[in-house]
Length: 587
Image (tube, rainbow, N blue to C red):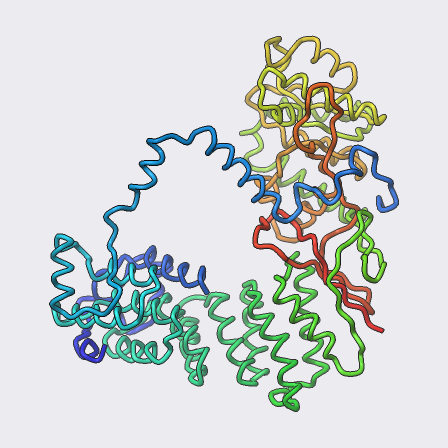
């Protein structure tokens, strides 16, 4: 590295402009080496980031049995995917696929397992046919293989001797390796080289320097780099998080909260590591005798931390187990307040198994329901692309149909649920079984379908379809129409009691809503109103549905208690909810 240090020069034609360059917007580097920086830097940053009122209602028997199983339970999607993958492998595995998998990736650059001399590097390069961008590909291979730093240093020395200079791109790749490996002293040296050789740093390099400097006694220099980024673009949540964690670690609580407030003002979402640092930092500074809290009272700091919990509630964020542990320890450390934390779960009715208090209902208030109904009508059913899904005449015809019918208790997406059966010849039989089960419960049913379902064929038996129409109100749209807007309209129009049956998780429709608060309200309503068929329905067997929980899975407090749902699995998809809770009670 020392030999390479003085051989790194800037490109006189690089047009760096003397400022920090926002390559997230330009997509092209201005540094030496002509790097196409947007894709490369984002991959490098990614590699770093990747490493580093219905409550009292008794559920009918067709729901009660399956608690806590739910399509929204954390890990359900991943388990389902793994099962389907295993089935696919059993069906499709063959010798050609096996051979293809074993040969895929052959010929990739294989890094050495020890430092090489310049002559040895040259020989290796020649053995690979003088591969273009050999230095970049080899440095990337060294990073991905977790190679020792000395090997990467020997590569830099070889390139410096061969080319007389080190490109911006190669130094950036080397920087990724150093930051990932925790080689902060080496990062300082790279920083000096790049500052001396190039007129500006791109956002990727700047972010890496912030991350590394924030871990050291030179953490305040990370703030200076953050200010440079801020002149060009809004720094990332990760940039802010690194500086905040550094300030907390070094006892500068005022600086930490100042940058936290700026992060929120910029509309960024804090990373959980930031919250973890703040909860841990307050406890540690208190234990050290209040160092760092002189300009902020402990009561004010406590209010700020409680504000984080309210932020989680308002944004439907679930802390990971490590953060939940820090929250628990912080509460229990509060002097004179006697908080006790316990890891627990809930009953099917939403009663905490630890303190026996009742959690908030999943049912929407009248005001929430009306707001959601108005937004869905405006943004989904009457949205800009509604007539890509239907025609004005068909939509008005359906509205008139719903208006003259009695209030529905449940709306069934006929084509959607009929396809639960893998046997195309059983689709009308499947739909009939579901409708019959709902009718058996005394419910008023609307079945939405498409006109082709009325044409007798193997999939849609005439007899089955007649029985369905005898037991339920039916509306059949044109074959090109999309069912979901009709389903949402009928369900919301019928009132807050009305449920709907579909295996569609409605993520595209939720995304049409204009703001996060309304999308969260939609998700809450969905979890309280969507019935999903539970598993395979055998011929002649009764249909069962996954349970609808009575309570809302959200951070909540009653003053003398907090209940915080937390992630105890890495398998949770964004539309799923945790199953475990942290119960905090004040004695």
